[in-house]
Amino acid sequence: MIDELLKRPVIPVIVIDDANDAEHLAEALLAGGMDVIEITCRTEAAQEALLRIIKAFPEMLVGAGTVVSPEQASMCVDVGVSFGLAPGLNPSTVNYFKKHDTLFIPGVMTPSDIEHGLSMGLKLLKFFPAGATGGVSTLKSMGGPYASHGVQFCPTGGITLDNMNDYLSLPIVSAIGGSWLATKQQIADKQWNVIRHQVKDALAKAAEVTDR
Image (cartoon, rainbow, N blue to C red; front, side, top):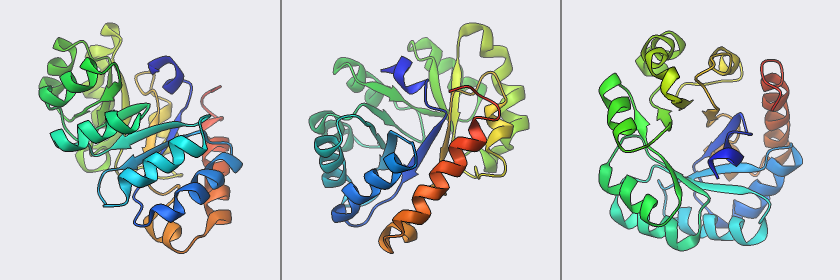
């Protein structure tokens, strides 16, 4: 699964309030050329939205984000997500996903976090919150010493169409996560064409610095 995820330079980070919008959202992403999605576990609709997309669109890589409790980790495994993410690094959550042979990408913000991840055999880490903690310059300085260990980062937080390639240009960055690709309000307003165009624009932008 990690090899499949590394083929995708942009991951939409989704907050969804109504699970009835899940299939329409997935269709908009696919129409724009994007076959990966991260549904954050921030709303009561998250579980059903995950289930709906996994069932209706087996061709998509469906991940769950903001996995911060044992209950959420169990739910993610039960519904069959392709991968999970969290804003921080909780060893119990890491081990739970490992036990169930599911890719998990914990969040890191310091060199100590990165080394903790390495000690657990993790090579793909989420840099969060990217923008608020210095952005590209911080990631470049902090992550550089670990490049020889094969560590890759997925920065999330404060990333936009305008700055995404600043991150993707770094060899240590595998992908970026972006909430602007389909905002909570756009989903609620059912702006599927707007989302489709935003996805197409992001993929075209990513193609300027990556061949994925």
